[in-house]
Length: 293
Length: 291
Image 1 (spheres, rainbow over the protein chains, first blue to last red):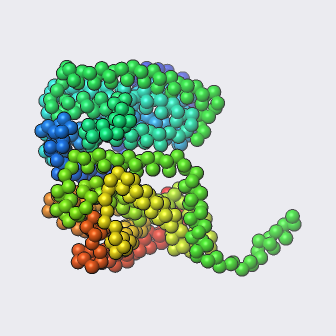
Image 2 (cartoon, each protein chain N blue to C red):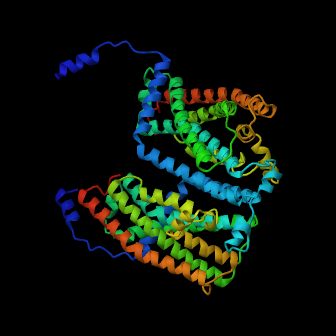
Image 3 (cartoon, rainbow over the protein chains, first blue to last red):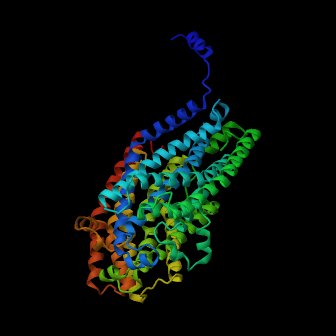
């Protein structure tokens, strides 16, 4: 090909696609293709996840059913109890950290500047990256649940109503934390690091939410017990357990209360997160530090 | 400056002073401490992570029964002490398996490996220097974990002979896991990415070595698999000492020590051989400094 032809080709005025939906799809697809290229990582992560669930099933053999009953989980097998906790906690962690991870990656690789200066709206970027996060986390969550139910024989109340109710609760859980995820991404834009905070946040959430033990046993430490019930995850896990362990649905009174609280958290955190992100983006544009790391 | 004088100065044969090994090692420790100290927030996160992990198993122990732990021969302390020993000694496992390959990977990543290796520092001294600070840090984290556990009510039989036996078992634990680390480093130097050896070893040993539950709870095939891992024997021995006051006079402890010694005798030449292949191959390709 002649150089003149290349120059001509680059000069050609192509109408730019400004549809936000196309941008979202493009970002999602580009990142999903990157994910698919890490086949070894996917296989290794899948095996590790299955191994950790198997480990929980052996830990469950030491649990005293009477002590579970005392905590309000009469007749509930601990493996099923832990399975719901572990899957929801992992899903939340993977979704929330997705945005901050990808932004940190773009900053490190020096690709954030082209994205910011392109026609792509940052909203499309956030949605596209988040969709990729939902899908990948969904793969691991479904895998863990299937292994738990069919291989390790965890007894969960599975029917169309409970599955739909569980999906609603998961979506609300993500929505209630999305504000925090977006906020963390905004802070990463400015301070160029933030992963430690997201890690700390995930560890504390998992512990206080009662993934491996009933929250009744946290009552002995009143500060931690109060903190636990200030976190949206505790309500999401409580609702998920009511649905998958006892067969309740979103229209059941006890689940409905949890859902109302999750909606309230979404309404509070989402605008704050978006505001912080906008502030971060404006600041690095103004300071000219989009490309710096 | 006169160019000829400069060339003459550089060409001058200055006899190199042999620095004693202990001073080189001390320099490595000081260097690593300085780097570690700059990441104070990460340090704080590590400590918070450890506290939360121990608290989780403390609360989990409220819903467990000590029956299986006692049936396995660990008479004192119940499930919490059992899990605490598993969690605490994981610091040494992590140190022994990961330190060498992590430090070599970091030096490659930062582009400093080639510089170090082309200096007068011997490669063996370099490796020893790289692991020393991690050993000190892991020991501090282990002691901290035990202390937190004791504050939460973990109980141990601590006699002089049982503590001495624990020290011997700990040395064997580190030596046996160091072989896995050396082998894994050899693989990393060749393939330039996260070693599948470390990965497979980590999740398998967590699953079958009885870190969080006695081995008897596993199905026969996993229990049998668990017997191939040095961590199984190290943890069993350490628990028998700290939870049942056993010492070197006990046949169970002697059998654990024997197994670990055999493992080290067999694994060390294999690990060193794989490491040599990886190291020589990377040097031949000129890719030692690349990651």
